[in-house]
Length: 552
Image 1 (cartoon, rainbow, N blue to C red):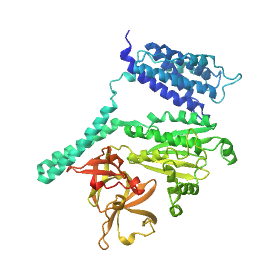
Image 2 (tube, helix red, strand yellow):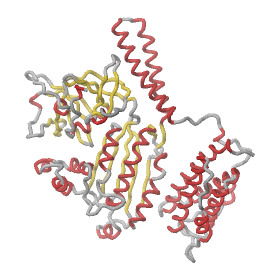
Image 3 (cartoon, rainbow, N blue to C red):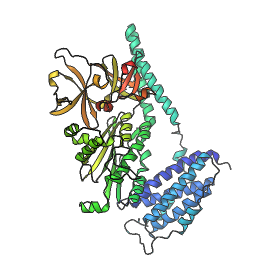
Image 4 (tube, rainbow, N blue to C red):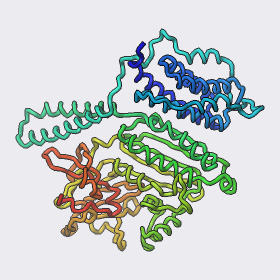
């Protein structure tokens, strides 16, 4: 019988089993983990073996069967899950993933699994090991095993026609088409306004409603749970901790929260950078922790939560934290800041220094990380997604990195502002409020003007100056419109010439050479055909001008 038509289904379900297996094995190894995870582990190994046997993939059957044998012994209480066995099971999971990849590609090249099979079959846990707190009750095992074997007459959920697989490229095209529809809707509105065709207002209103509905549905189709990328993180932390000789308890919350697929793709590596830094340099060694009065093992938590149209991804550790004064001294040493600037820096600003390229306070850079190594890439990735990176730390108590991201970045709401001949779109998620300032409201600190908002001093920047445009002399005491933006957890006010209004825009990425401009992150087209740059408030706040954009 030709089984090739079922190959894609096998690959899809096998990957699902292996993803869950990798997470559960680390979860069960954790002393505080749920002991019921062993039943779930056994079920995934058993199901994968059965699927592979049906398809005739003997190598997959052999490895899965040997792993299942060990899991069965743990379930029955014959042995406990020791670290050496965990390593072996994880190696088996990696090998199974490789075998499934070969099946997916249609390759006939065999993978040498003989050595792994021999080690799995000959592995014997330490003599006298008895299952204690990590074992599960044996009562009801027969019913659990029966549940692990599906009824052949039962209609499987994967056979349902209620869902289908769609290529990601197709979804990307749908987003682009929806964005173009939104742009053309504004063009139609502008044309109707110019022509005075009142009879077109009602069809335009209906079109607007339909386009917004289409936008919402397309976004729903692109939304994926954070778990899609999170499954690998427990294994990553475990492997790094073992390499460092550290005991680390990893906590993951909110993996059911959904984000746009494009954001998930871009944010994976930044999260890996932060986790590496947390394990290597954030957490102290066991001896250091005991001397500081802390538990022997450290804790790293990754929390995802939804806040209206934003998602916050927080990575925290209970390690040594960061000393803002030490960061300032390092910044001065590297020429990033002056002594005068360091004296005026708040701790929150000092923490942001670790995001400068090449900045590190580590005595030695390891093969895992150096505090600050890769953090410049983290900041750039977050800013490219119109997000905000906030760093919090207490010296001796730990650090927290918070990435606040929009649910999606393709179609956003923005404030349209003017600066001389240049118009810009500021993503609305970056703007906390708009204010009108009188010249007398500005506190003239040398090289650091500020205003008082709710009794807090907020730095002020002229957007004309940030964009390297000629300054305009403000007549008399006319109010100055300003946007107050949240940049890395701190507020910055940008003085502009005029605020035109709010608009939904379709953001297009910039290509070379425009991608080299600093202070802008994309572009959009207005209803009357004009091109507007999308502002990068974080870069503008740091004084990184976009250059002469009005000449582009």
